[in-house]
Image (cartoon, rainbow, N blue to C red; front, side):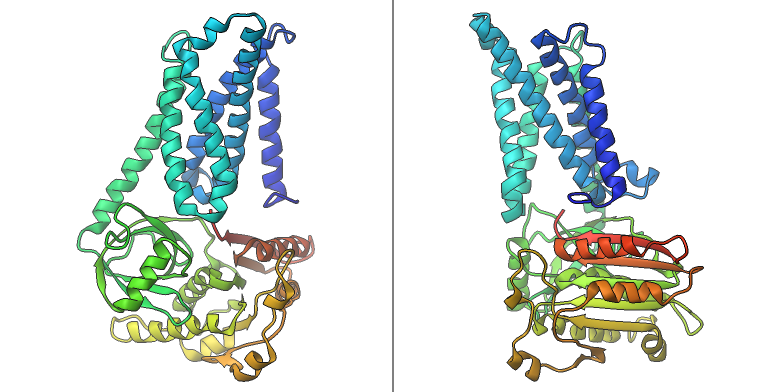
Length: 468
């Protein structure tokens, strides 16, 4: 469904909206009195603010109760946030209109009303930052988002400062306690994991950066993600990256702006330098692919960090008797983007040559793994000329990358997924994992949904998407 990640997601949102409508009108004695509506809007906004904070927790209880980590709740966090903003806005507008019409301007100058003005301004700025700034500069958005949240908590508490009979302050204290507790847990982990830890950085040919940590994380697994702190690059920031390997813990970071750009510039200037560092996490609840008969990994661009990690972890755990099949589909816009594949694989071989960890037999890799790499398929607003290599690029580029076959032109991602699902019997299980831009994820979701049949194999989908 358009705008939703799945039918279940759409149903959940519709139920949430329906509950808001029901609670908005339930129990109001006289629906013709505007102040009754305004008062209820205020209560509903306070309740939704609590939900917004709960859905934003990194260490959410829902990760233990359900199969959802915090990043999978981000969409619901945004919907609840927009709903709370709308309710708070209507709460204020209706009250101002009522007192203005009654000529009671003095009420609008009382302390609890005056503090509502910066509260409303902070809410408006939060919404605008989420709708606009988040797309262009996530680091700036995140800092502003946190600062505005603190302003909202303080002004909301001052707006209704009494415990009884107005219990808005209880909701405010609950929000603050949840947020502070989550921050304390993360800070404690960061300090603990910083002891005797360090990170060595290497520049990659494709413009990325490889980070190898001295210490790993408990429960870390390729495909999950963790937060990285490297004070020499950014002293007061942590950033999330997908775990590519755990022995040792390794991250492959694509270069954009801000922290990733500064990190890559440092690695280029001083390759192989070891820096003080720490980790916090891991996060993510992706299924274990080793329990499936067929695994289809689809990546777009730097999304291969996620799928390479899953594939490498599977191959380490497989042996000659393993029956699992892996199809690896990687779409890239430029051939240079595949240079990291050679570096990554050769690095794995050299790093593990003397640490007691053996790589899977080459015969098993050749027999059980099919890897297709092709330029990124364009959808929607992407321009056609960016999707296909020039004739000179195709003629000069090799047809393989360390025995991985390359196919030039637009990949038939939909056809490749259908072919993979149809290649197994109906009593087997297929796991499809994808990571990449929105356009690619939409194709994978729609194709997977169309492959689910009562007389076909069991199919499960897991998607990681750029930017949360």
